[in-house]
Length: 132
Image (cartoon, rainbow, N blue to C red; front, side, top):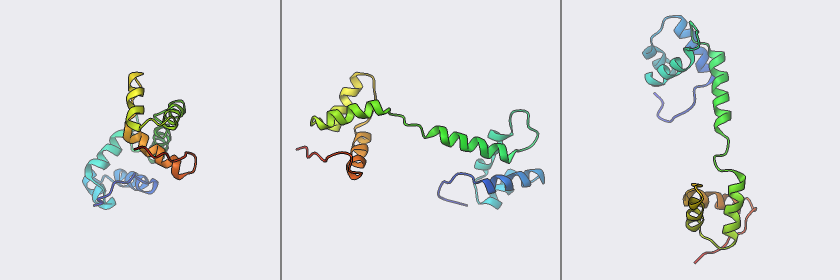
């Protein structure tokens, strides 16, 4: 059984379809793919619906790709990041920036701000500012 999490691949979905059509149990499918029985159960439950009488691996793959694509939208808008960088350039600390945004009901943790600032500095898009 795998110990590190990974998404179900297209090949695995095709194999799940073959095995379910052959009447294999979730436990047997999980063993064959090296997955958890609950992972197989969730995959089947998620993709058996909508009036289908069998597991549709093509539809499952398409829906998985759509979910992944939609999940990558930024949670924090570029407008907010511009304000963060403006305050950072005005010598505010990430903790101060986070607190100021919170007063406007915008919740961005100081850890998130630190990560983004370091990424921007590393990419050369932001100047490092030492704060004592």
